[in-house]
Image (cartoon, rainbow, N blue to C red; front, side, top):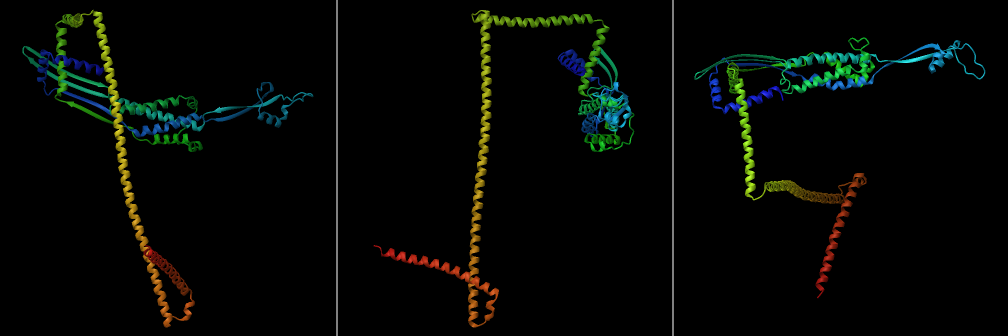
Length: 500
């Protein structure tokens, strides 16, 4: 529990006790009436708002910097020298090639059956060099980012915790034969306000900045960066090597470096919040009145040397309170004993009966709880069922409406199809009649000699004759069908009449 919570709870309990005591209540009421315009509270808090753009940019690019460090890029340097054959630990391909080019290293020939052993041999050794340009760039980036974040973090932590307050009050209380005068000038300035950073989400933003600061310092403490720190630091501008341009991790690291170098703002804004009360509000005035009463009590307690007397009275009151609690406990036991005697049972039997009754009540409570849970489950199932029924009803109504609409549209479509078919049939019939009339007109023209004989050999005329012939065949087929139906009808009807 925080210090402020302790004092808040203690003052609240104190005011609850003094509010029920007549003399204390009259004194605090008299102090409240003595309020004047000189009473004043002035407080100023510094609120620091951290801008999120640079924090988010660093957070999104920092993982790529970590991945680039894990690549541990290095330059393999190969060094060689000629040593005595006894000092050579191993022979490589370069040793054999060197010996083939320098036969002077062989000073004697081997005897038959022995191996050729030179007096000296060339050996090579590979050494890893981690101070390549890309790693030195990462070290430059981390050091620059560490300074960038540290400068803003320290400023934000300092400004965000600043608190300054002054309180002035002057009381002149006259209460019968008692006169109380009190003047107070209080001033406090603190740079470690625990509540300043927990308001309005500032704590979360500061934690994010602190996390960036910790991660940056941890990356600087990696073995690779410790090794690179021994080499001379590169100076801007940065040379965009193929690795810095093509490797994905280094590419994001270069973006982060460019962003930090080009960043011009402070990364935060400062807001000052002032609180003034003159005269005091009701809540503050009531608690100031309690402070005057406490000051009066302290002055009288130590000025009149009544501390021992007050301690004795306090202990006596505590004993009296304990005696009252013990008396209540004894009375409760006497009541239990009387109930046991009324039931004509011993105390043990009465306690057993009470225990059985309590168990019975617990069982009833458990049964009631189980019934309640069962009822709740039943209600839930019924609600689900009603929801499902309602959903099915809605779906059925929608399906019925959909089917009716589909049937209506299909009926209208069939009607339109029939109308179109009828119109097509009428059109075809009209075209047939037109062709027939045209054929008759041509026949009449031939009869009167209006159409020359040579015109009957043209392509258009022959096509026209074919269309007329087709119409004639169609008309003949239709008329023949009607004629056959009429013949059947007449014959069948006449036969039917002849039958008795």
